[in-house]
Amino acid sequence: MASLKFIALSGTTDVTENLYVYEYGNDMIIVDCGVGFPGPKMDSAGLIIPDFTYIKKNKNKLRGILISHGHEDHLGALPFLLKEVQAPVYATKLVAGFIKDKLSEHKIKKVEINIIDPENDVLSLGVFKVTPFRVSHSVPDGVGFAIDTPEGKIFHVADYKFDWTPVDQKPFDIKKAAILASNGTLAVASDCLGSTTPGYTESEEEIEIRIEEIIRKERGQIFFTTISSNISRMQQALSVARKLGRRVAFIGRSTDTKAQIARDLGYLHYPRGLVVSPRKARGLAKDKVMYIISGSYGQPGSALHRVAHGEHNLLSIGPGDAVIFSSDPAPPGSKVSVDALVDRLIRLNVEVHYYDIQENLHVSGHGSQEDIKMLFALLKPKYYLPIGGTIRHMRDYRNIAVGMGANPNEVFEL
Picture: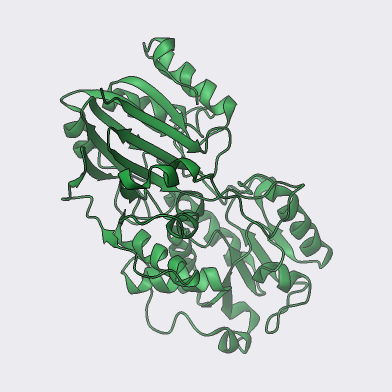
């Protein structure tokens, strides 16, 4: 007799490399397919790829791959999986744009990429009926999935928080999630990374005010860096630049490409003339330019790393200029690289605004303890599956569930 299986192929004791399988009888779906990042003792140029052995052995069952949002730890391993198996991919419009670019970079063709509408679509994938719904995160166009199975409904809610004033003006669709949960929830598999943090996670809206306060005081070049998929943060930087009379240039392939995709698809908005080419920006007065630049994790070879080491073919940096890190060194091992880059910039007498000086230039995209409680109260699941965190995050997630009345045996620490 068939049974329902939830298989975490990776992403169980680390915050990256998310890949989860739902299986029932002869049908199987995948939610997310992310890469991991090298630790301090590993090759910094490499990536960590999940083990696809189980999927390859059962590829005849695979009905589809669902991607929740546009971060690399949720979609970055897709090219490597799709070299091994064939399956349709489902993602929202912006995320599908990122996926198409990534597959093109890897010269992978003939992949069926389906754009899903979280307001209206319901997907039938074998025995699974999947209903997407909108969630808030640090990147636009993220979704959760309500997965109807023969055993009951499971909610898969990857990275999320309850932000009522998101940059894209599309908050978590509580109404739809509540309606989907109204007939009962067998289980929830949800983000646990914020389970050790008290309160609610702050809104992205607050960041723009702080960015403006810093840039208003600066008189040199501004180098603004965040992860390349953080379109919302780029939008905030663009809005501040426009207000303060600075032109903007995108520097680095990943930043430039993702910004162009987001602009083409209607997720990044700016007037004609605000964004200029890097060469034109170099000719402007220093107090009239901002560079949105790749390299927020201090990656060797990234644009910001090359600028800091005098190796960029177009740009240079020095006293009077400022660098703003609007991201935390989140992937394992990245803090070593970012700290080294920050130190290098400080030695150059650059004004550096970064994670350790408490200017709150980054807010988490992950729900804190009160966000997690709100999700549990909304969905009222029988079983709980913490995902996307370390062992300590899973344990605190368990404690939150038990504190709200869950039986400890109904929370599965992976």
